[in-house]
Length: 549
Image (tube, rainbow, N blue to C red; front, side):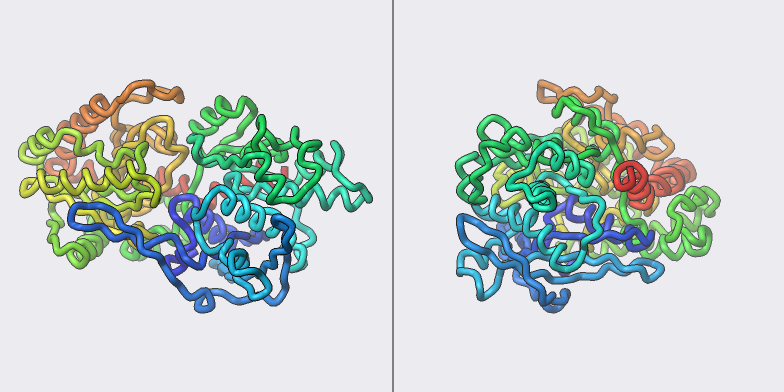
Protein backbone atom coordinates (compact mmCIF):
# COMPACT_ATOMS: atom_id res chain seq x y z
CA UNK A 1 0.00 0.00 0.00
CA UNK A 2 3.01 2.30 0.26
CA UNK A 3 6.77 2.09 -0.13
CA UNK A 4 7.45 2.65 3.57
CA UNK A 5 5.69 -0.63 4.40
CA UNK A 6 7.88 -3.42 2.96
CA UNK A 7 5.19 -6.11 3.17
CA UNK A 8 5.39 -6.95 -0.54
CA UNK A 9 8.07 -8.39 -2.80
CA UNK A 10 6.88 -7.59 -6.29
CA UNK A 11 4.10 -7.38 -8.82
CA UNK A 12 1.39 -9.35 -7.00
CA UNK A 13 1.68 -7.22 -3.87
CA UNK A 14 1.63 -3.99 -5.85
CA UNK A 15 -1.34 -5.23 -7.89
CA UNK A 16 -3.22 -5.95 -4.65
CA UNK A 17 -2.51 -2.40 -3.50
CA UNK A 18 -3.71 -0.98 -6.82
CA UNK A 19 -6.89 -3.05 -6.52
CA UNK A 20 -7.61 -1.69 -3.03
CA UNK A 21 -6.86 1.90 -4.11
CA UNK A 22 -9.24 1.55 -7.04
CA UNK A 23 -11.99 0.01 -4.92
CA UNK A 24 -11.74 3.06 -2.66
CA UNK A 25 -11.96 5.39 -5.68
CA UNK A 26 -14.99 3.53 -7.05
CA UNK A 27 -16.78 3.16 -3.71
CA UNK A 28 -16.80 -0.65 -3.84
CA UNK A 29 -17.42 -2.21 -0.40
CA UNK A 30 -14.29 -4.29 0.04
CA UNK A 31 -11.96 -5.31 2.85
CA UNK A 32 -8.39 -6.52 2.41
CA UNK A 33 -6.60 -9.12 4.53
CA UNK A 34 -2.88 -9.86 4.55
CA UNK A 35 -0.04 -10.69 6.96
CA UNK A 36 2.09 -8.24 8.88
CA UNK A 37 5.67 -8.99 7.88
CA UNK A 38 7.62 -7.20 10.60
CA UNK A 39 10.93 -8.14 9.02
CA UNK A 40 9.78 -6.80 5.67
CA UNK A 41 11.18 -8.37 2.54
CA UNK A 42 14.82 -7.29 2.31
CA UNK A 43 17.04 -4.38 1.41
CA UNK A 44 19.08 -5.21 -1.67
CA UNK A 45 22.75 -4.30 -1.60
CA UNK A 46 24.85 -4.94 -4.71
CA UNK A 47 28.62 -5.21 -4.33
CA UNK A 48 31.02 -3.96 -7.05
CA UNK A 49 30.75 -7.30 -8.87
CA UNK A 50 26.97 -7.07 -8.91
CA UNK A 51 26.41 -9.88 -6.41
CA UNK A 52 23.25 -9.33 -4.39
CA UNK A 53 23.38 -9.23 -0.60
CA UNK A 54 20.18 -9.18 1.46
CA UNK A 55 19.90 -7.04 4.56
CA UNK A 56 16.89 -7.38 6.89
CA UNK A 57 14.37 -4.58 6.93
CA UNK A 58 13.09 -3.44 10.29
CA UNK A 59 10.16 -1.05 10.19
CA UNK A 60 7.78 0.41 12.74
CA UNK A 61 4.25 -0.89 12.20
CA UNK A 62 2.87 1.57 14.75
CA UNK A 63 3.93 4.45 12.50
CA UNK A 64 1.61 3.31 9.70
CA UNK A 65 -1.09 1.16 11.28
CA UNK A 66 -3.78 1.26 13.94
CA UNK A 67 -3.83 -1.70 16.33
CA UNK A 68 -7.24 -3.35 16.69
CA UNK A 69 -8.18 -4.58 20.17
CA UNK A 70 -10.12 -7.68 19.09
CA UNK A 71 -8.29 -11.00 18.89
CA UNK A 72 -8.81 -14.15 16.85
CA UNK A 73 -7.06 -17.51 17.08
CA UNK A 74 -6.18 -20.67 15.17
CA UNK A 75 -4.99 -24.07 16.30
CA UNK A 76 -1.59 -25.21 15.02
CA UNK A 77 -0.06 -28.54 16.06
CA UNK A 78 -2.46 -28.66 19.01
CA UNK A 79 -1.57 -25.16 20.26
CA UNK A 80 -3.79 -22.10 20.24
CA UNK A 81 -2.14 -19.24 18.33
CA UNK A 82 -3.56 -15.81 19.09
CA UNK A 83 -3.83 -13.26 16.30
CA UNK A 84 -4.26 -9.53 16.35
CA UNK A 85 -4.96 -7.21 13.45
CA UNK A 86 -3.56 -3.86 12.45
CA UNK A 87 -5.74 -1.59 10.34
CA UNK A 88 -4.69 0.52 7.38
CA UNK A 89 -7.33 2.64 5.65
CA UNK A 90 -7.01 3.48 1.96
CA UNK A 91 -8.94 6.63 1.11
CA UNK A 92 -10.40 7.02 -2.36
CA UNK A 93 -10.79 10.14 -4.47
CA UNK A 94 -14.27 10.81 -3.08
CA UNK A 95 -13.39 10.03 0.53
CA UNK A 96 -14.68 6.44 0.55
CA UNK A 97 -12.30 4.19 2.49
CA UNK A 98 -11.34 0.54 2.16
CA UNK A 99 -9.68 -1.06 5.21
CA UNK A 100 -6.80 -3.52 5.00
CA UNK A 101 -6.13 -5.72 8.02
CA UNK A 102 -2.59 -6.97 8.65
CA UNK A 103 -2.59 -10.16 10.75
CA UNK A 104 0.10 -10.48 13.43
CA UNK A 105 1.04 -13.26 15.89
CA UNK A 106 3.75 -11.26 17.69
CA UNK A 107 1.83 -11.33 21.00
CA UNK A 108 2.91 -12.10 24.56
CA UNK A 109 0.25 -14.81 24.73
CA UNK A 110 2.13 -16.84 22.10
CA UNK A 111 5.38 -18.76 22.49
CA UNK A 112 8.59 -17.12 21.21
CA UNK A 113 8.58 -19.29 18.07
CA UNK A 114 4.90 -18.70 17.37
CA UNK A 115 5.39 -14.94 17.71
CA UNK A 116 7.61 -15.05 14.62
CA UNK A 117 5.17 -16.94 12.36
CA UNK A 118 4.02 -13.78 10.57
CA UNK A 119 7.41 -12.03 10.56
CA UNK A 120 8.91 -13.13 7.26
CA UNK A 121 7.60 -12.80 3.72
CA UNK A 122 8.56 -16.00 1.87
CA UNK A 123 10.68 -17.05 4.83
CA UNK A 124 11.25 -20.31 6.67
CA UNK A 125 10.71 -23.92 5.66
CA UNK A 126 7.64 -25.79 4.42
CA UNK A 127 6.18 -26.07 7.92
CA UNK A 128 6.60 -22.34 8.51
CA UNK A 129 4.89 -21.63 5.20
CA UNK A 130 1.92 -23.87 5.99
CA UNK A 131 1.57 -22.28 9.43
CA UNK A 132 1.57 -18.85 7.80
CA UNK A 133 -1.06 -19.83 5.27
CA UNK A 134 -3.24 -21.30 8.02
CA UNK A 135 -3.03 -18.04 9.95
CA UNK A 136 -3.75 -16.12 6.77
CA UNK A 137 -6.63 -18.23 5.43
CA UNK A 138 -8.38 -19.65 8.50
CA UNK A 139 -7.25 -16.90 10.85
CA UNK A 140 -8.24 -14.28 8.31
CA UNK A 141 -11.83 -15.52 8.13
CA UNK A 142 -12.05 -15.73 11.93
CA UNK A 143 -10.67 -12.22 12.32
CA UNK A 144 -13.22 -10.82 9.88
CA UNK A 145 -15.99 -12.46 11.91
CA UNK A 146 -14.61 -11.04 15.17
CA UNK A 147 -14.49 -7.59 13.57
CA UNK A 148 -18.14 -7.84 12.58
CA UNK A 149 -17.87 -8.51 8.85
CA UNK A 150 -20.84 -10.86 8.79
CA UNK A 151 -22.28 -9.88 5.42
CA UNK A 152 -19.41 -10.81 3.11
CA UNK A 153 -20.80 -12.28 -0.10
CA UNK A 154 -17.54 -12.98 -1.95
CA UNK A 155 -14.08 -14.07 -0.85
CA UNK A 156 -11.47 -13.29 -3.52
CA UNK A 157 -8.30 -15.39 -3.30
CA UNK A 158 -5.34 -13.95 -5.18
CA UNK A 159 -3.14 -17.01 -5.76
CA UNK A 160 -3.48 -20.10 -3.58
CA UNK A 161 -1.80 -18.68 -0.48
CA UNK A 162 -5.16 -17.80 1.11
CA UNK A 163 -7.10 -20.85 -0.01
CA UNK A 164 -7.38 -22.42 3.46
CA UNK A 165 -10.04 -19.80 4.04
CA UNK A 166 -12.33 -22.23 2.22
CA UNK A 167 -11.84 -24.74 5.04
CA UNK A 168 -12.92 -22.13 7.59
CA UNK A 169 -15.99 -21.37 5.48
CA UNK A 170 -16.84 -25.08 5.13
CA UNK A 171 -16.63 -25.57 8.90
CA UNK A 172 -18.86 -22.53 9.37
CA UNK A 173 -21.48 -23.87 6.98
CA UNK A 174 -21.44 -27.24 8.75
CA UNK A 175 -21.96 -25.58 12.14
CA UNK A 176 -24.98 -23.68 10.78
CA UNK A 177 -26.79 -26.99 10.24
CA UNK A 178 -25.32 -28.71 13.33
CA UNK A 179 -23.08 -31.08 11.37
CA UNK A 180 -19.77 -32.38 12.66
CA UNK A 181 -18.24 -32.15 9.20
CA UNK A 182 -19.28 -30.71 5.87
CA UNK A 183 -20.88 -32.48 2.94
CA UNK A 184 -21.74 -31.74 -0.72
CA UNK A 185 -24.36 -29.11 0.20
CA UNK A 186 -21.84 -27.12 2.26
CA UNK A 187 -19.23 -27.44 -0.47
CA UNK A 188 -21.62 -25.94 -3.00
CA UNK A 189 -22.58 -23.06 -0.68
CA UNK A 190 -18.92 -22.21 -0.09
CA UNK A 191 -18.17 -22.50 -3.80
CA UNK A 192 -20.78 -19.81 -4.51
CA UNK A 193 -18.94 -17.47 -2.15
CA UNK A 194 -15.42 -17.88 -3.56
CA UNK A 195 -13.49 -16.39 -6.45
CA UNK A 196 -9.96 -17.45 -7.38
CA UNK A 197 -7.38 -15.64 -9.49
CA UNK A 198 -4.29 -17.55 -10.57
CA UNK A 199 -1.30 -15.36 -11.34
CA UNK A 200 1.43 -17.69 -12.51
CA UNK A 201 1.93 -20.37 -15.16
CA UNK A 202 5.03 -21.57 -13.26
CA UNK A 203 4.66 -24.70 -11.11
CA UNK A 204 6.92 -23.28 -8.36
CA UNK A 205 4.32 -20.61 -7.77
CA UNK A 206 1.74 -23.16 -6.60
CA UNK A 207 2.26 -24.24 -2.98
CA UNK A 208 2.00 -27.93 -2.10
CA UNK A 209 2.30 -29.54 1.33
CA UNK A 210 2.76 -33.22 2.30
CA UNK A 211 -0.36 -34.82 3.78
CA UNK A 212 1.38 -35.87 7.01
CA UNK A 213 2.51 -32.27 7.59
CA UNK A 214 -1.02 -31.01 6.91
CA UNK A 215 -2.50 -33.46 9.42
CA UNK A 216 0.08 -32.48 12.04
CA UNK A 217 -0.21 -28.72 11.61
CA UNK A 218 -4.00 -28.48 11.20
CA UNK A 219 -4.67 -31.21 13.75
CA UNK A 220 -7.77 -32.39 11.92
CA UNK A 221 -8.97 -35.96 12.05
CA UNK A 222 -11.11 -35.62 8.92
CA UNK A 223 -8.36 -34.81 6.40
CA UNK A 224 -8.44 -38.28 4.85
CA UNK A 225 -12.23 -38.30 4.44
CA UNK A 226 -12.37 -34.87 2.77
CA UNK A 227 -9.21 -35.08 0.72
CA UNK A 228 -11.06 -35.24 -2.62
CA UNK A 229 -11.94 -31.59 -2.09
CA UNK A 230 -8.39 -30.32 -1.93
CA UNK A 231 -5.75 -33.00 -2.30
CA UNK A 232 -3.72 -34.06 -5.30
CA UNK A 233 -2.24 -37.52 -4.73
CA UNK A 234 -0.75 -37.34 -1.22
CA UNK A 235 -0.29 -33.59 -0.93
CA UNK A 236 -2.33 -30.51 -0.24
CA UNK A 237 -2.19 -28.41 -3.40
CA UNK A 238 -3.33 -24.90 -2.50
CA UNK A 239 -4.20 -24.09 -6.10
CA UNK A 240 -6.31 -27.25 -6.44
CA UNK A 241 -8.13 -26.36 -3.24
CA UNK A 242 -8.95 -22.88 -4.57
CA UNK A 243 -9.97 -24.23 -7.99
CA UNK A 244 -12.31 -26.84 -6.52
CA UNK A 245 -14.00 -24.42 -4.15
CA UNK A 246 -14.49 -21.36 -6.38
CA UNK A 247 -17.43 -20.67 -8.66
CA UNK A 248 -15.33 -18.26 -10.74
CA UNK A 249 -11.68 -18.73 -11.73
CA UNK A 250 -9.63 -16.39 -13.88
CA UNK A 251 -6.18 -15.76 -15.25
CA UNK A 252 -4.73 -12.26 -15.47
CA UNK A 253 -4.53 -11.80 -19.26
CA UNK A 254 -6.28 -13.41 -22.21
CA UNK A 255 -3.20 -15.44 -23.13
CA UNK A 256 -2.70 -16.46 -19.50
CA UNK A 257 -6.31 -17.65 -19.38
CA UNK A 258 -5.57 -19.94 -22.33
CA UNK A 259 -2.39 -21.25 -20.70
CA UNK A 260 -4.22 -21.83 -17.40
CA UNK A 261 -6.99 -23.79 -19.11
CA UNK A 262 -4.32 -26.12 -20.49
CA UNK A 263 -2.54 -26.38 -17.13
CA UNK A 264 -5.59 -27.09 -15.00
CA UNK A 265 -7.80 -28.85 -17.58
CA UNK A 266 -10.81 -26.80 -16.57
CA UNK A 267 -12.63 -23.62 -17.52
CA UNK A 268 -10.62 -20.50 -16.62
CA UNK A 269 -11.83 -17.04 -17.57
CA UNK A 270 -9.51 -14.07 -18.08
CA UNK A 271 -9.53 -10.57 -16.62
CA UNK A 272 -6.46 -8.69 -17.75
CA UNK A 273 -4.66 -6.82 -14.99
CA UNK A 274 -4.65 -3.06 -14.71
CA UNK A 275 -2.83 -0.41 -12.66
CA UNK A 276 -4.02 2.48 -10.50
CA UNK A 277 -3.61 5.39 -12.86
CA UNK A 278 -3.17 8.25 -10.31
CA UNK A 279 -0.47 6.30 -8.46
CA UNK A 280 1.65 5.49 -11.52
CA UNK A 281 1.23 8.68 -13.54
CA UNK A 282 4.18 11.01 -12.92
CA UNK A 283 3.62 14.54 -11.70
CA UNK A 284 4.46 16.17 -15.08
CA UNK A 285 1.84 14.01 -16.83
CA UNK A 286 -0.70 14.46 -14.05
CA UNK A 287 -0.50 18.22 -14.60
CA UNK A 288 -0.76 17.75 -18.35
CA UNK A 289 -3.80 15.49 -18.05
CA UNK A 290 -5.44 17.91 -15.62
CA UNK A 291 -5.27 20.60 -18.32
CA UNK A 292 -6.33 18.57 -21.34
CA UNK A 293 -8.26 15.58 -19.93
CA UNK A 294 -10.16 16.88 -16.87
CA UNK A 295 -11.76 14.12 -14.84
CA UNK A 296 -9.23 11.48 -15.93
CA UNK A 297 -8.69 10.33 -12.33
CA UNK A 298 -12.39 9.59 -11.88
CA UNK A 299 -12.76 8.11 -15.38
CA UNK A 300 -9.51 6.61 -16.69
CA UNK A 301 -11.17 5.89 -20.04
CA UNK A 302 -11.13 9.65 -20.63
CA UNK A 303 -7.41 9.27 -21.34
CA UNK A 304 -8.38 8.26 -24.88
CA UNK A 305 -8.55 12.03 -25.41
CA UNK A 306 -4.76 12.22 -24.96
CA UNK A 307 -4.63 12.20 -28.77
CA UNK A 308 -5.70 15.85 -28.63
CA UNK A 309 -2.78 16.94 -26.43
CA UNK A 310 -0.24 18.98 -28.47
CA UNK A 311 2.85 16.94 -29.25
CA UNK A 312 5.32 19.55 -27.90
CA UNK A 313 3.60 19.41 -24.52
CA UNK A 314 3.72 15.60 -24.46
CA UNK A 315 7.45 15.81 -25.08
CA UNK A 316 8.06 18.48 -22.44
CA UNK A 317 6.18 16.44 -19.82
CA UNK A 318 8.24 13.40 -20.80
CA UNK A 319 11.54 15.30 -20.53
CA UNK A 320 10.56 16.50 -17.06
CA UNK A 321 9.92 12.88 -15.98
CA UNK A 322 13.14 11.75 -17.66
CA UNK A 323 15.19 14.36 -15.83
CA UNK A 324 13.76 13.12 -12.53
CA UNK A 325 14.97 9.60 -13.38
CA UNK A 326 18.41 10.75 -14.48
CA UNK A 327 18.81 12.75 -11.26
CA UNK A 328 18.02 9.58 -9.31
CA UNK A 329 20.58 7.63 -11.35
CA UNK A 330 23.30 10.23 -10.70
CA UNK A 331 22.49 10.39 -6.99
CA UNK A 332 22.64 6.63 -6.52
CA UNK A 333 25.40 5.60 -8.93
CA UNK A 334 27.37 8.75 -9.71
CA UNK A 335 26.82 8.06 -13.42
CA UNK A 336 25.60 11.02 -15.42
CA UNK A 337 23.29 9.94 -18.23
CA UNK A 338 22.45 12.21 -21.16
CA UNK A 339 18.81 13.29 -21.47
CA UNK A 340 19.20 13.47 -25.26
CA UNK A 341 20.20 9.80 -25.56
CA UNK A 342 17.57 7.10 -26.12
CA UNK A 343 17.08 5.45 -22.73
CA UNK A 344 15.80 1.88 -22.37
CA UNK A 345 14.22 0.98 -19.04
CA UNK A 346 14.00 -2.52 -17.57
CA UNK A 347 12.82 -3.01 -13.98
CA UNK A 348 11.19 -6.14 -12.58
CA UNK A 349 11.98 -9.16 -10.44
CA UNK A 350 15.35 -10.63 -11.38
CA UNK A 351 14.57 -14.22 -12.27
CA UNK A 352 15.47 -16.47 -15.19
CA UNK A 353 12.30 -16.35 -17.30
CA UNK A 354 12.24 -12.52 -17.26
CA UNK A 355 15.53 -12.63 -19.25
CA UNK A 356 16.76 -9.21 -18.15
CA UNK A 357 20.07 -9.86 -19.90
CA UNK A 358 18.59 -10.66 -23.33
CA UNK A 359 19.47 -7.16 -24.55
CA UNK A 360 23.11 -7.93 -23.74
CA UNK A 361 23.28 -11.28 -25.54
CA UNK A 362 25.52 -9.85 -28.29
CA UNK A 363 27.28 -6.73 -27.03
CA UNK A 364 29.15 -6.37 -30.30
CA UNK A 365 25.88 -6.04 -32.21
CA UNK A 366 24.49 -3.64 -29.61
CA UNK A 367 27.56 -1.43 -29.93
CA UNK A 368 27.16 -1.38 -33.73
CA UNK A 369 23.56 -0.22 -33.30
CA UNK A 370 24.54 2.49 -30.83
CA UNK A 371 27.36 3.73 -33.06
CA UNK A 372 25.33 3.64 -36.26
CA UNK A 373 21.59 4.06 -35.75
CA UNK A 374 21.92 6.20 -32.62
CA UNK A 375 23.29 6.21 -29.09
CA UNK A 376 21.75 4.03 -26.37
CA UNK A 377 21.80 3.98 -22.58
CA UNK A 378 20.08 1.49 -20.27
CA UNK A 379 18.63 1.70 -16.75
CA UNK A 380 18.06 -1.59 -14.90
CA UNK A 381 16.56 -2.42 -11.52
CA UNK A 382 15.19 -5.52 -9.83
CA UNK A 383 15.65 -7.82 -6.86
CA UNK A 384 16.35 -11.54 -7.04
CA UNK A 385 14.63 -13.78 -4.50
CA UNK A 386 17.15 -14.62 -1.73
CA UNK A 387 17.11 -18.29 -2.80
CA UNK A 388 17.23 -17.63 -6.57
CA UNK A 389 20.90 -18.16 -7.36
CA UNK A 390 20.27 -17.97 -11.11
CA UNK A 391 18.57 -14.60 -10.67
CA UNK A 392 21.53 -13.31 -8.68
CA UNK A 393 23.97 -14.50 -11.33
CA UNK A 394 21.89 -12.71 -13.98
CA UNK A 395 22.38 -9.41 -12.13
CA UNK A 396 26.10 -10.14 -12.06
CA UNK A 397 26.09 -10.72 -15.82
CA UNK A 398 24.47 -7.33 -16.33
CA UNK A 399 27.19 -5.69 -14.20
CA UNK A 400 29.89 -7.43 -16.24
CA UNK A 401 28.20 -6.45 -19.51
CA UNK A 402 28.02 -2.84 -18.32
CA UNK A 403 31.81 -2.82 -17.96
CA UNK A 404 32.30 -4.35 -21.40
CA UNK A 405 29.82 -1.97 -23.05
CA UNK A 406 31.49 1.16 -21.69
CA UNK A 407 32.22 3.78 -22.83
CA UNK A 408 30.09 3.37 -25.98
CA UNK A 409 26.95 2.40 -24.05
CA UNK A 410 26.21 3.42 -20.48
CA UNK A 411 24.38 0.74 -18.45
CA UNK A 412 23.39 1.32 -14.82
CA UNK A 413 21.72 -0.98 -12.29
CA UNK A 414 19.79 0.75 -9.51
CA UNK A 415 19.61 -1.27 -6.31
CA UNK A 416 16.71 -1.91 -3.93
CA UNK A 417 13.86 -1.77 -6.43
CA UNK A 418 10.60 -0.67 -4.74
CA UNK A 419 7.45 1.28 -5.58
CA UNK A 420 8.91 4.77 -5.69
CA UNK A 421 11.85 3.70 -7.83
CA UNK A 422 9.48 1.75 -10.08
CA UNK A 423 7.45 4.91 -10.69
CA UNK A 424 10.59 6.85 -11.58
CA UNK A 425 11.84 4.29 -14.10
CA UNK A 426 8.51 3.58 -15.81
CA UNK A 427 7.88 7.31 -16.22
CA UNK A 428 11.39 8.44 -17.12
CA UNK A 429 12.52 5.86 -19.69
CA UNK A 430 12.07 6.54 -23.42
CA UNK A 431 11.31 2.88 -24.19
CA UNK A 432 10.01 0.20 -21.85
CA UNK A 433 11.79 -3.07 -22.55
CA UNK A 434 10.23 -6.44 -21.70
CA UNK A 435 11.80 -9.73 -22.73
CA UNK A 436 10.12 -12.69 -20.94
CA UNK A 437 10.32 -16.32 -22.05
CA UNK A 438 6.86 -17.05 -23.54
CA UNK A 439 4.41 -18.14 -22.27
CA UNK A 440 5.69 -17.55 -18.72
CA UNK A 441 4.67 -13.88 -18.39
CA UNK A 442 1.19 -14.25 -16.89
CA UNK A 443 0.41 -10.56 -17.37
CA UNK A 444 3.03 -8.02 -16.33
CA UNK A 445 1.98 -4.52 -15.31
CA UNK A 446 5.11 -2.38 -15.57
CA UNK A 447 4.47 -1.67 -19.26
CA UNK A 448 0.99 -0.45 -18.34
CA UNK A 449 2.54 2.04 -15.90
CA UNK A 450 4.94 3.18 -18.60
CA UNK A 451 2.06 3.69 -21.05
CA UNK A 452 0.32 6.09 -18.64
CA UNK A 453 3.44 8.25 -18.96
CA UNK A 454 3.60 8.06 -22.73
CA UNK A 455 6.44 5.50 -22.71
CA UNK A 456 5.97 2.91 -25.50
CA UNK A 457 6.79 -0.74 -24.94
CA UNK A 458 9.29 -2.79 -26.91
CA UNK A 459 8.27 -6.26 -25.80
CA UNK A 460 8.05 -9.94 -26.55
CA UNK A 461 4.45 -10.87 -27.37
CA UNK A 462 3.42 -12.42 -24.08
CA UNK A 463 1.19 -11.48 -21.14
CA UNK A 464 -0.80 -8.26 -21.49
CA UNK A 465 1.27 -7.07 -24.48
CA UNK A 466 -0.51 -9.56 -26.75
CA UNK A 467 -3.59 -7.39 -26.19
CA UNK A 468 -1.93 -3.97 -25.90
CA UNK A 469 0.36 -4.23 -28.92
CA UNK A 470 -0.39 -2.37 -32.14
CA UNK A 471 2.82 -2.35 -34.16
CA UNK A 472 4.15 1.17 -34.59
CA UNK A 473 1.06 2.58 -32.89
CA UNK A 474 1.35 1.75 -29.17
CA UNK A 475 4.88 0.37 -29.35
CA UNK A 476 6.77 -2.47 -31.01
CA UNK A 477 6.95 -6.25 -30.79
CA UNK A 478 10.08 -8.35 -30.46
CA UNK A 479 9.69 -11.30 -32.84
CA UNK A 480 6.43 -12.99 -33.75
CA UNK A 481 3.54 -14.25 -31.66
CA UNK A 482 4.23 -17.97 -31.33
CA UNK A 483 1.12 -18.77 -29.31
CA UNK A 484 0.64 -20.25 -25.88
CA UNK A 485 2.77 -23.38 -26.20
CA UNK A 486 6.11 -23.36 -24.36
CA UNK A 487 9.13 -23.28 -26.62
CA UNK A 488 11.18 -26.41 -26.02
CA UNK A 489 14.55 -24.93 -26.96
CA UNK A 490 16.64 -21.96 -25.89
CA UNK A 491 15.32 -19.15 -28.05
CA UNK A 492 17.68 -16.46 -26.73
CA UNK A 493 19.65 -16.19 -29.97
CA UNK A 494 16.49 -15.86 -32.06
CA UNK A 495 14.78 -13.39 -29.72
CA UNK A 496 17.88 -11.25 -29.23
CA UNK A 497 18.38 -11.05 -33.01
CA UNK A 498 14.75 -9.91 -33.38
CA UNK A 499 15.29 -7.33 -30.63
CA UNK A 500 18.43 -5.96 -32.29
CA UNK A 501 16.72 -5.79 -35.68
CA UNK A 502 13.76 -3.85 -34.29
CA UNK A 503 16.03 -1.46 -32.42
CA UNK A 504 18.36 -0.84 -35.37
CA UNK A 505 15.80 -0.57 -38.16
CA UNK A 506 12.74 0.89 -36.45
CA UNK A 507 12.91 2.17 -32.88
CA UNK A 508 16.23 4.02 -32.79
CA UNK A 509 15.68 5.74 -36.20
CA UNK A 510 12.18 6.81 -35.12
CA UNK A 511 13.55 8.38 -31.94
CA UNK A 512 16.39 10.29 -33.58
CA UNK A 513 15.22 10.93 -37.15
CA UNK A 514 11.43 11.10 -36.93
CA UNK A 515 10.55 12.52 -33.51
CA UNK A 516 7.10 13.56 -34.72
CA UNK A 517 6.13 9.92 -35.37
CA UNK A 518 7.79 8.81 -32.12
CA UNK A 519 5.68 11.27 -30.11
CA UNK A 520 2.63 10.03 -31.99
CA UNK A 521 3.37 6.54 -30.64
CA UNK A 522 3.72 8.07 -27.17
CA UNK A 523 0.26 9.66 -27.46
CA UNK A 524 -1.29 6.41 -28.64
CA UNK A 525 0.35 4.52 -25.75
CA UNK A 526 -1.59 6.80 -23.40
CA UNK A 527 -4.82 6.98 -25.38
CA UNK A 528 -5.15 3.28 -26.20
CA UNK A 529 -3.20 1.43 -23.50
CA UNK A 530 -3.36 3.89 -20.61
CA UNK A 531 -7.11 4.35 -21.01
CA UNK A 532 -7.77 0.59 -20.98
CA UNK A 533 -5.08 -1.27 -19.01
CA UNK A 534 -5.99 0.34 -15.71
CA UNK A 535 -7.47 -0.99 -12.49
CA UNK A 536 -10.79 0.82 -12.99
CA UNK A 537 -11.54 -1.34 -16.02
CA UNK A 538 -10.11 -4.41 -14.30
CA UNK A 539 -12.14 -4.02 -11.11
CA UNK A 540 -15.28 -3.23 -13.10
CA UNK A 541 -14.87 -6.61 -14.79
CA UNK A 542 -14.40 -8.36 -11.45
CA UNK A 543 -17.57 -6.74 -10.12
CA UNK A 544 -19.63 -7.81 -13.14
CA UNK A 545 -18.09 -11.20 -13.89
CA UNK A 546 -16.99 -12.49 -10.48
CA UNK A 547 -18.35 -10.64 -7.46
CA UNK A 548 -22.02 -10.38 -8.44
CA UNK A 549 -22.26 -13.30 -10.83
